[in-house]
Image: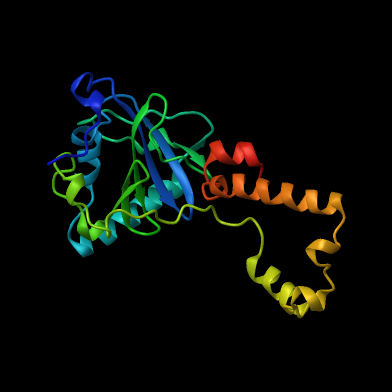
Length: 227
């Protein structure tokens, strides 16, 4: 059975880098894992830190939220303590509204402790509920993962506007849905050559770009399509 291990795990474990994220109120608090970021290293340490007992879990989550709310927010990378070392809350976190949870470049593993939805994510693709964590992360078989583990999770940032006010303003317009005929739209053969060309170009752009908009919450994609 295949576990959560990368090809480089057997080549260089000490130099394996990754990121640790906490998610709270739809914001991301990040630290850099300089060494031992593979699942049996930092990954296992992070999973072991999450209590299995429901009452202990609630207290643990409350303490983590208090830690994040009181932590110093930084604009540059913050190094997380190595495996086995005590965490120093005073180190602070690099805080962002959007986060790329995928493994990329020199980052081989990412772990997110989601305090909003009580889940633990690996590389942004495998999600474990806090009440269904594996005992040994590196030995957990990928081939036997059920659909309750493999799911995307909510990743969109919180809106920076009043959604309820916008909805009320929209409803005040009393919008209705009408057919193209009632709207007065011309038929295809009534369009000019330039109008037909514009529509075809628009179709091609939408067809090409629709896939990438699915991942518009990630910084790398947002930089391409704009905010």
